[in-house]
Image (cartoon, rainbow over all chains, first blue to last red; front, side):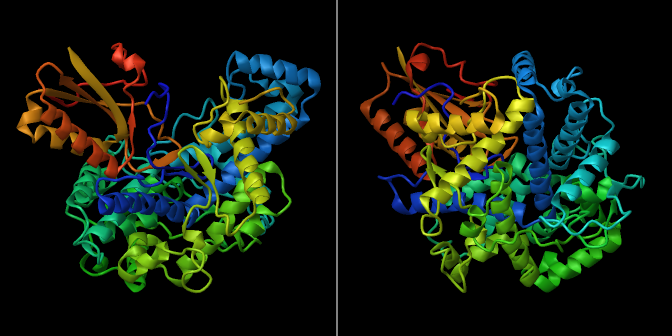
Length: 485
Length: 111
């Protein structure tokens, strides 16, 4: 079979940019049907884990809202340009990225454009810094503290009543200048760890529940266990190894999952009632993780020695808060007024809000689940052990009202776009596709340098001449620019 | 003369395939295996594992039909465990397998 040199591997992935799950169907003609079916299920569990953990955490909700604010701002910037400025924008973009250049195109529309550029960069930088490691990335010439404070302000300002709490008068969100207590890369080999690898470590650990506790473990091919063991020895186990080094001892897998969950749930101004000031140590997941891991040198939670329960998790949170001074965050705001995928897809909103509307509807259900059964997100793999595995079978209807919110709805298989046809119509699915394609093009337009990227989108849709033409027409109306995939 | 096969897939699956090939003496003698990392982006996505390439070179003048069959069975079993994109395309056959985002090679080599 001939393939193009830049063809993707077909590897499973949840792409944050489009919020689409890339997962090919199991082989049509497997050598070993059982092996093939289990291998597919492990991948699906792994990526589903990311979906639930990302949208079911306070850090994930903050990242969604930062991205929504950034996209809205980029779109507004494009709308404010005069036709002559649009032509200059295209010329400038062809010679290099727009936002973030010393002579950025923001100056095209005067001081207003320059301010929008700075705000966009603050939102972009803060998103990167939250997904990054213990040391923030370079902020492109703007002060780090200013960028984060500005991003927190803009996000709360834009999201008040639309995912975030009412903004109290005179209470600006900001970082406090508390002395840092997170280990620096010089303390341990922590420089390579980032927030993505925290998620990956949790997903691999959740696979081990299937291996060790599941009723199907006796029929699972040992090859799958060998694959998981190899994965944890690589970068996906980096968080585990660093935590044990910081703690100075072996740490149980349940405790490690609780540590990661602690790291991913900071107090966030606008989500956690009564909070406006936080330290960077308290907000950034890898810093939280490292500080909490080090505190394990002094205490051994009951969680390490027993089957995880919500009570043990509560005790772990209380002990870790006392030991580190870092609080456990929660989401007190109403994330979405929609209660279903269909409801979210049919809300009349701007293109930049379609996908955030969808993910916040899922986040709302996931945070309800977290409140009702704290264990279910922290130890996500346990949901699928023994009779819990039935949650996989009919996610729309199993149990009371289903558990559709655990699973990413938009999927790509063999390059084709798939959606839950039992929940939404083709028009809804088209609306969601346009929302994800158009909003994810904005970064490329204002901060990219070459052709619009497409590896986060279903290949077949963009290969179809008629569909591509229709999408490009929408893109041109949306941006006012003659750009195309 | 040799036949070269390049497959792209998740690292844990690919490494297991390499181990399986190495564990069969009848293949180890006629098969050379290399693993190469790829540029496939991971920054803004969560994946099942890093994506790598396995480059299998089979000495066609020496390998028996049995060796071919065994290799085919091992690869087929690896495909049960996860997607392996076949990259035995023209560029590879012409010896241009250093293209396509391969940035580090010879991490693992078996003769």
